[in-house]
Picture 1 (cartoon, rainbow, N blue to C red):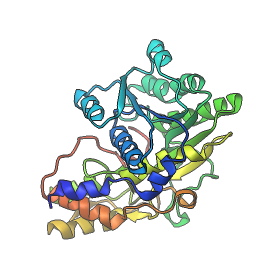
Picture 2 (cartoon, rainbow, N blue to C red):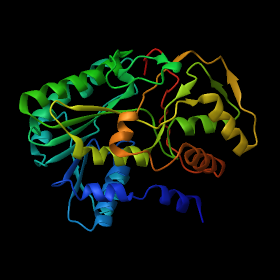
Picture 3 (cartoon, rainbow, N blue to C red):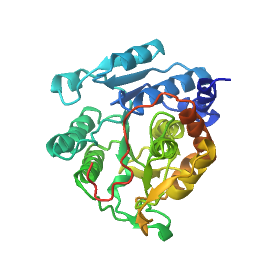
Picture 4 (tube, rainbow, N blue to C red):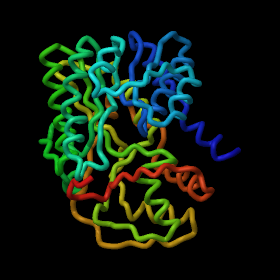
Length: 337
């Protein structure tokens, strides 16, 4: 069995998703579907529809700067629309669909381009919320809206005060506040989805640590603990969240159950590669951590465990699997992205 065959087993829809997608009334529109998570989310939703044996359309909207993504989604039976959401004509032409998953946003390259980040993350949400005021909307946000918190406290919960560090994180909280305003104004059911570090074989915190160990680079321990979740699980939760939208919006942290030591992760990858990790600095007493107990109450625990992720990504890196150059900057402590 090739590494690609092994990976495909981790990307199949679960029975929970197939059951829930059959309960979602109407088609699903994914806005910002051309990024890191969107293409896999669209395919997962389409596979779940096929598994459930139902009729439902998945429509993926993006500028699709990479033609290969556009063509691949079309080949998978997913309807695609090329659109720039900041262009009023493009936004106006989008069909009215009862279920929206909103992935559009801007993070890396914020420093020096702050106005674009605020426009994408805080201005555009108001236009989208008005356009789709009769729909259920799952709004992607970020655990970055929280401050660093003491590791001993077990991570930030949804009832704790958001206190974002840096303009990217501030604009993410702006996105949440704007959507929440229109949810109340128009009685639009919404679900605010605060994600901490989705991981795939091609990108993510785990991949970055694995590559550092294999290439014998130093690993900065100042952000000594992290949360991670398998991208397939994060995508599944986003789709199933369409059944949990409310007015005012429900806010839920989405990540894995562990607060993981970066040092432990590096040592685990070291065992796979037969190398001793190199470290710099020492672990701080605080980190960017979310507590996802509410998420597990709603959706159950992730299908893919931490050890499975470590082993899969370790083998992928050891065998030279293809990756994308989109670093997470998870070690950033000052909010400068």
